[in-house]
Structures are given as structure tokens and as C-alpha cells.
Amino acid sequence: MRQLDGKIAIVTGASSGIGREAALLFAEHGAKLVLVARRRDELERLADEISGNGGDAVAVAGNVAEAETAREAVEVATRQFGGLDVAFNNAGTTGAMVSIPEMTAEMWHEVIATNLTSAFHAAKHQIPAMLTRGGGSLIFTSTFVGHTVGFPGMAAYAASKAGLIGLTQVIAAEYGPQGIRANALLPGGTDTPMGRAVSNTPEALAFVQGLHALKRLATPREIAQSALYLASGMSSFTTGTTLLVDGGVSITRT
Image 1 (cartoon, one colour):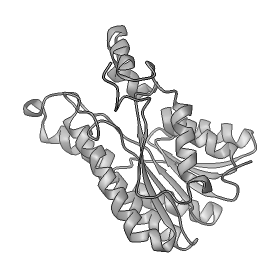
Image 2 (cartoon, one colour):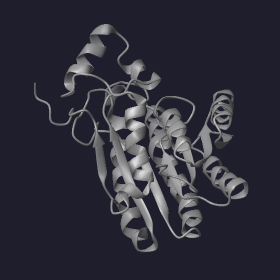
Image 3 (spheres, one colour):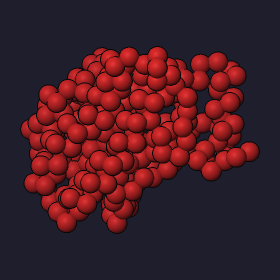
């Protein structure tokens, strides 16, 4: 059974990692897609791949930290496909891994803009579009970092991702009566280019893997499957939640 037949979805951070796998999975389940990321060439290749497999996808290249990108993505979804039902606001950055005294204001603001302010811009434009369709599903990629675990050197990242949880809860409370659901997806360590940049030595990778109860990292597809759950009618009574998909890193002490 295809879970997103007739649905129109935006996926940000779609050029690689979790976003790319989510776009492919959403397309497999019938969604028409607006793909958003900075790298146009990668987005165009992904759109061609989806189209080659019988799906519908269009690329919007831009920086999610800029309000114009959020506005354009919704406008393209409406103009090209007729509206918006699902938004997987997944794009993000870890930023520089430095202690707070070493962190410049520019480093801080870059991470907050990419991870948190972008979500405000997205919701501002996505919510009205969803309301015209009678509701929809907003998904924000947060993380266990800053929620159940603190890692040295990741203050801006943790703060921005924790902020997404508060935003999610308010959207869920404000727009639940109008059929809009909002949830935060909290992946554990995942084998993505961003994740590999953090675990960039065999020793670091082994350490991060060992933090998880499953003693491994997630594949991007595994996280995408949880995004599909939140996007689809399977989660019709799920809103305002923090869905941990973290391989047990939040509860492991061994």
C-alpha cells in the first residue's frame, strides 16, 4: 500500500543523507515532491531519478535560512502540483565544534539560522498552504543532542535543535483543531556526509557507534522510514511529539 498517494510534499536538505532517502521513499509511496537544498546539480539529478522511476519531483535550489527559499518552495508546490500536504523540514548543520568561549557570534548565528530560524520561515509559509487543503503534516528534524544527551562542542547545534521541539509543540497546539499535525523527528547517529564529518576517524566512529544500544549507526533509509510514518495517515493521532529514532543512544549506559 502506498502511504502518500495524492499527497504533495516538500523535503528540505534533499540533496544528500536523510533528506535524499526521504525524498526517494516519499516518491515510492506516491508523493509529488518539491526538493529543496543549496546544491542545484544534486537536486536536479535526484528529480531526474524520481521522474525516471515514474514519480513527480521539481527542484528548488536555495538556502533554507532565507525566507525567500521557504516562500518559493511553497509557491512551486502550489503552482506545479496544486497545494501542500506534507513538509519534511530536514535541512541542518552541525556548525563548528568548539567550546562556548571559542565560539564566535557568527558561528552561533549561522547554526541558529540554518537549523531554527529556517523552521520558522518554513512554517510561516507552509501552514497557510496546508490550511487550504484542510490540514497536513509538518515534520522537523531535531536530534537527541540537547534533548537527552549533551556533547561538548555542540552548544549551538543542541540549542537550535532543542528550539525546534518547542516550535513543534506550539504549532501542534495552535493548528491541531484545523487538521495540521506537527512532530519533531529525533535521529540518533546516522551514516550521512554530515555524520561522517563528525565521526571522521575510525576511533571516533567506533566511539559513536558504541554509544547506541544497537552498537551501530542508522542508515539514512531507516530514519526516512520514520519520517514516512509521520508524514502519512499511519500517524493520524500523533502530534506535538518528539519521536526518538536513536538506536537507544538516549538510554544506553553500557
